[in-house]
Length: 219
Image (tube, rainbow, N blue to C red; front, side, top):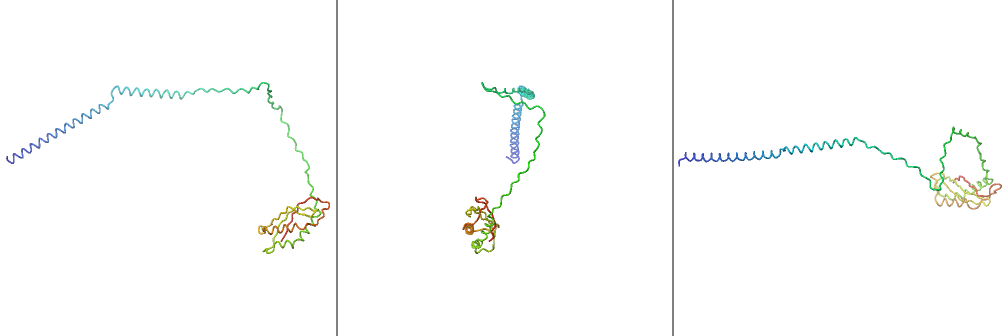
């Protein structure tokens, strides 16, 4: 076989293959188009389907209209009657309610000025001056309670004094300044010095019961 015959035969085989490939491609395109048309037909609603859809929509609209009309109509309210007054038990007396007073209200009461009660001052204790002098006489003994103190101080002494026996009780010792704070030993020493020995007092016409006395002591 000559070279020209071989080329001719090769071209014929190639054209045959191309024609066969075109035929297959056309078949595939035709099959795909037919499948697409079939699917489109299935998606399109039929007359019966469209009729059912419109009926459902109409029923929904009627239901919404009925609900809106029910909401606009108010139900009448029924007022309950007031409870009847309690009936008294058998044999029990019911007192009637008092009627309001008739006429204008009574005039206000005028304020009556009364003289103020002025209490007379308590009489001075006849033995108080003698008691203060005897307390001052114990200053040397009181100074012994504060041996070693940096500077002098001042305190207030309160006690109940019985003039008949010259005894003191219920003693209270309070420093006058914060810097004058007393130690326990100093406070016990002051109380002991001011209580012993008993005082020599003359109650006179004054009360014989214990009297509260307060004075300032410097040390």
